[in-house]
Image (cartoon, rainbow, N blue to C red; front, side, top):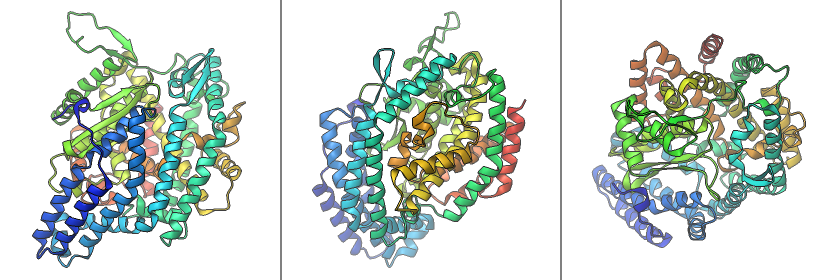
Length: 575
């Protein structure tokens, strides 16, 4: 295995990939039986692996969006990416139309063909110019937000470094920090709204070209949603309003009492305990000797990574092997730096069959959370790294997020490694956050559905819509003097609304399944873990509703599932 820093980079050209794809397509047309077709498909696996440099570029560009070399390389891939996607679609069109399809399907499974068919409905060559334009708009958004700063105590600070200050136990400090962060967003509002307005128009045109009445319909094919559709999602959102919004309001009352406050304002929303939230206090790497005093280093990158290693090593043999592979090969970049893109994600370098975690450690509980969440993604990828049929490594997003969010809860027993004697505070905070997350993702999904279904909406209309829906999902939220948030501009702070429309609901669906695992953990830890391992290995072979049913979890589209979960969580958090 090659260490991340030693992975060579050489530009992948469109011309090279086009020639190889055309050769594979011609060979596929000449195939005389299913086995010959499968042999060509295996050659495509190698072609995909040889495009790994594109993923390397994406990550290295995100590590510093101001790096001129990788910025230019990424701009090139943004231009050729849609054309490469069209080549892939052309190849899959041949598979779908093959006279040997039935025999190929017996080998790959019908689900793989359902995914390919959805891909055909979601994109074709007519969209290439629009997709290129969309990529340029998103690159502009990344440049804008990655270099954002906040004026604080006479100096400029990178915006995502303000989170710890905004969670200060000192109420006046967090109020001032909250306003400073919103002022930073407000300063970018005009450009953020301009980018989004252009994205809306672009995506509406994409839907029109593909023959859909709105981008909502197109997005469901893009998201590969199989086994359910917009009606089921709308019904799910209503169930969340019925069972989780009242639960959240009740927990907010409990949090208000815990903080000894008469009223909660927006700047109180990220604080759970009067002494402040738990922050990582980890043992430095190499400090495991029982005769040596353990040195606590809050927020230390090395300490948090060591705690991550110890957690996964103790969790199971499989996770122990995974974390050694990840960290020993430098497959995680977690430090905040100037010019580094905000947020976190997991990607895979196919040539090396290696997952990679991109994150920003900010000294808050996020240091632990993100290594559990992105670690869940990476662990599932690691389990599938030797999968012979690479199509079985294709995850739809709601399933991928189930892997990640469930891992957050399987990691709960190990939080002492990160938070010491405040581990239980973290567990309480994380569970309460899970409820708010479900509600917030439903808010985002409903906002996007209404925006994309109503092309006449202006940015002022979007802000008014967000403000109205925000009050519906979070009736007790009080923005006080924060004009940016009070006027409904909070959606502009959310990268997914720009980058990945309609992804948000997948977090909500996945969190329901993750909470199902957490509840199961309390009843039978061994059985729940074995179910999770099977789920990770079976993902890519069937649709989301079938997978969760086979795993022994409740359907998020059934009211009984949400009712029982909300009742269980209320009982657990009220103790």
